[in-house]
Image (spheres, rainbow, N blue to C red):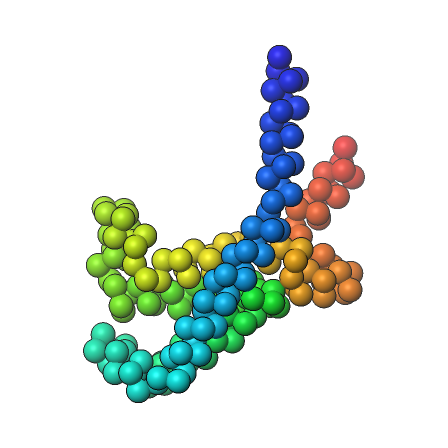
Length: 169
């Protein structure tokens, strides 16, 4: 009975492991595109973005508007194609935390007391997507993966740990 449970569990895990890269592709394509569009829109409306940033007391509002808009445009494109994904995911994650802090501080601080407020705030999905890519990488359907393969490094930590486990066994 225990052996059967182990086999079923291993099968379950292997099925969902196979879905990891398609899921990461979906996250990168959807939210990368959304971020790029957001950045493009902000770059073409810098006056309005600057005014909004001034209204929520963002320091150096005009420079920040240019920086945030550029980060979202370039970061979105990089996520979309899967290039330097983890590298760009870090500033995007920080950017979304800052968006919470300046734009919806009440939702940010309600993360534990009223999580619904946190989840429905505008930065949430972008923060989640950035954090997913930051912690899990871009997956095999990305330029990161294929460049890594060309350079002899796959970039998949599990492959490295699997080889170490196999060597020990």
